[in-house]
Each structure stands twice: as structure tokens, then as C-alpha cells.
Amino acid sequence: MNMIELENIDKTYVTASVETRVLKRISFSVQKGEFLSIMGTSGTGKSTLMHILGCLDKPTDGHYRLDGTDMVSLNDDALSHLRNNKIGFVFQQFYLLDRATVLRNVMLPLIYTKEYPEDAKEQAEKLLAAVGLTERATYRPNQLSGGQQQRVAIARALINNPALVLADEPTGNLDSKSGADVLAVFQKLNREGRTIILVTHDRNVAEHANRIILLKDGMVAEDRVISSPLDADAESRAEAEKEMSK
View 1 (cartoon, rainbow, N blue to C red):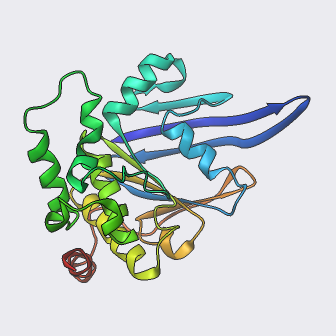
View 2: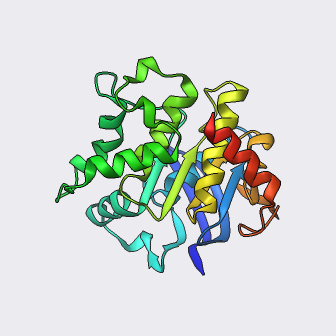
View 3: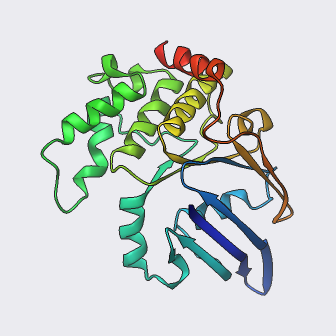
């Protein structure tokens, strides 16, 4: 079943009298439970596309349907509500509050909900366990490595149980070991049924997904399936679990 459907998406920015067409008739769909990488060099439109997928921006033309609802037709309030309830964001920068504990950072999105759940602390603790950081719950962000901080950011993105997780260059500020740890977290979450879209310029990072879409000059240049979300072999699963346990 398709969670996402993009149909002839165009995006043009106008500055003074200059028009810059960033996206050109982008069309593809994403099934529930897919792990998709959107890859391209700087200036190819991948971040613009992620902003549209995350309902942070609207296309100039075309249709974007999320779970059957056309996002282009929604007003700003409806889009804001949808972002808070259906989409989790992970960015290259961690955006953690230095004065708050790891546990508190994970709980923060719940503070902005209309009904603060009674089990908020329990939910956050479960997510920290899922990303292998149970023992760091009372630490401050500056007491963690970069990879651990990014794993906190992933847990925070999941606290509202979003249907879709968008990650924009999530390993960009990390060393190779920390980056591998973070990618293992995404693979584990995907095996548990999460739909994940990861934006990157790095092919090695992109190939941790099940499918790669390559953007070039604002268009889809390649759409390649690496493997089905359901047929990851036992060796890959064991390796991901090993990384998570470190």
C-alpha cells in the first residue's frame, strides 16, 4: 500500500525577477514500511524535496498525497497538525537542549501536544532503550558523543509515533563509526515497520536503504530497488543488532 504519492511535482523559487526551477516533474510513490534514500549532489533539489515531503513547503505545481490526503490542498494549520502527528524529523544538526537531560529532550515534543500523556516518561524510556541509550537517560547532551546525540534525536523524532520518519543528512556531522551506529538504528526501526526516507549526498550511506532515488538537475535520474523491506538476510540483521548493542 502506498503511503506517499508524488505526481509531477515542480518547485520554482522567485527572487526579484529571477526564477529558479529546482524540482521538475518529480513523480514516484513510497510504500508503507519502505526505507528509501534520496541521493544527489549539492543543488540537485533533494533538500527542497524533503521539505515538501515533510510539509514544510508546498510545490509550485503537482500533487503530494500522504495516506491518501492531498497535502497541497491543506492550509497551514492543517499542515502543522499533520507534521506534529504523522512525521518525525531527524536533521544533520541534533538540535538538543543543552540544559535538559537526554530523557527530557526525548519528551519535549509531547509538551506541545494538546493532551500531555500520563505515560510520557515511560514512552521516552522505551525509545531510549530502542536506540541503545537506556543508561544515558540522565546525562546532558554535552556528555554524549555525536553519534549518541543523533540517536537521542532519533528517539525524539519517534515520541509521537509518526507514520513517516524523514532524515536529512543524519550522518553528515559524524565520524564513520558513529555514522554506522546511526544507520544501524534506522535499519532496526525499518525492520520494525517504520517508513523512513533518508536524504544524503553519500552513496555509501544511501545503500543502507532498500531503495535509492537519484536526483540530478531537479529530476529523477535513477530509481533503483536494492532489496525488499522484508527480505533483509540474517547476517545483515545480526550486524545491525551488534552495532546497536555497543
